[in-house]
Length: 294
Image (cartoon, rainbow, N blue to C red; front, side, top):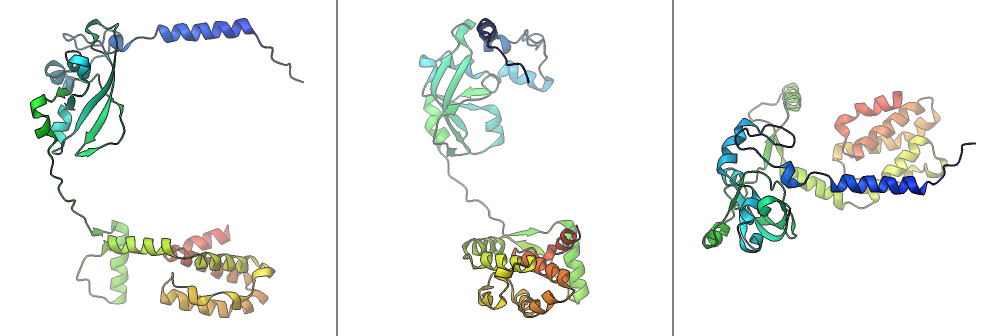
């Protein structure tokens, strides 16, 4: 029997004291993000900034180096980033709502800030903390330019209806067309609207298809309580194509004969094959054979 672990109150208190001291002695943001502009190194870690960032470091400002010059640390003002101005035509900016400055830092140019983000013309509903405040990438929008900066006329999105098939699937479709003797006059494309309508129709179907799949699964497992083929509602097979429905009807008619014969394993295989058809996976019926063999 294992020895019961004793509670050591002095050791527990010493652990809490060590954790508290480590928390208090951790470097502040003013120490972590301090920078020597001559060598482009962080004094705390001696890490050197990437060469591509040197130009922005010399020309641009950090967020709090801008806010510390404003009344109330810039609450209510609008700030943006140079990378946003270069990358997007839509307005991207933060509206400062709350600031918590680090009063121990020289110049109070470090701290945390919260605001409401508007990215590419879409404004978020809730305020959140502003990230990457230590980057030399921030610009403050002048007050007399704020209204002009906010103006934005949304451009209607270009909806793409057709997309090309993946290379392997495209080759399979072209080979099938060539085998059937069809003239290849156009490129096979995926109709996105047709796919979305099919998904919506499948979502709106009743539980009849699911009940039918459960009955067929019971037939494949040999459940004596649910083997009455006449009770299956064949008229409710609207979720599959006419060809697959006709194959299903023929299979159900010969199902009872297959059960009593030695080919019951083949009947189970056909049942699992139909279950894949009902799930819209007719093209992947070969997976069923692998499952049955395993």
